Length: 434
Image (cartoon, rainbow, N blue to C red; front, side, top):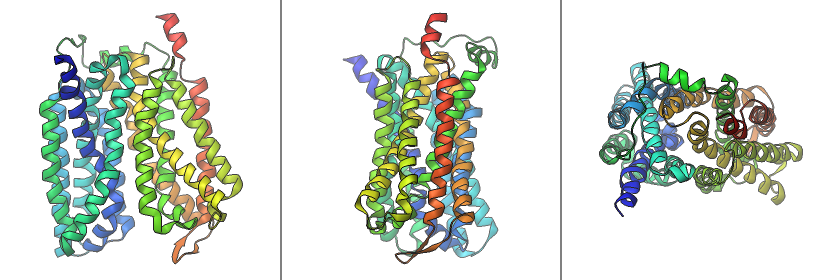
């Protein structure tokens, strides 16, 4: 009974507390326009704060992965302080911008707090519980990591309506007050996770001769092309996911469901979380976890090509069949986007073992950082430079441009599928050489 309690009290519960808190970074669209209006800048200028947050998430995970490897208590404490401090700082600079409209200091302050400081909390908070979960649930590593990472994905679905109500309830100054309140709430949640998080008592960390030798020696167990393939697959899946998800709201308007955008966003978030849990749990039963990535890419390609060929976005308004296809694409992409995250640590552990998994996982999350900059910007570039903006139910949208985004993502998904077949070493070969 004691071991069962420890699995949940020392592994799963603290992981959910940490990941549910930092996962609210994806609630950005709920308040980004309010921030822009309050401080007197355009929404596009403010949007860079979110891109910076994802970029520094990946970079902090890459550079601080060795800290997580050595001491999860130090890394989870860094995460708790950085995330809460970044959120509180964001609230302060929003308040400052409200009293000093069009102040560059306010905008840069938001970039630094929401992007850089919160980004450090995101990266270290994301990494800290993952290895611990895999150690507690060694027979079901995918299910365990999927559970925690699903908390990251589900945070948007749960927190978004709460934040929306807070903005209304707190009045005209609600946006900065909300950040200050949530900074306190999430610090308490994350600090509780920090106090509870612990590795199994019988786990002994492998001894390393030097700070760098352990990681390098571990990566040399396989041809470097295998790791490059995993990194690129992860990067492409996030880039394509963000490219489509970032345009989701206006795509929904194009097919005549603008009034249901909030409900569809919630369902998308559920698919995102479900993909994180479902795909990773499924992978536990497969001989090679890379099979899950092949499945994700095949499904994404199939539904993307169908919507391209039927011109579902451009001609879906009023056509029930085409509307169903576009929604299916959105949900499949969300599920595959989430599943790509939850399967990375377990795929890496299968290939490189548990000894340096936090550090290697951290380096791999740099793909998330770069995709955070390229995914949204790629979609915006295509939409702004191809097709034509027209009036769609009272809003400006570019159906042809969104169709062109799908063409590019279909090509990228196809490239990722090729990488999964030809660059990532099959587990059968690894077992034979072991």
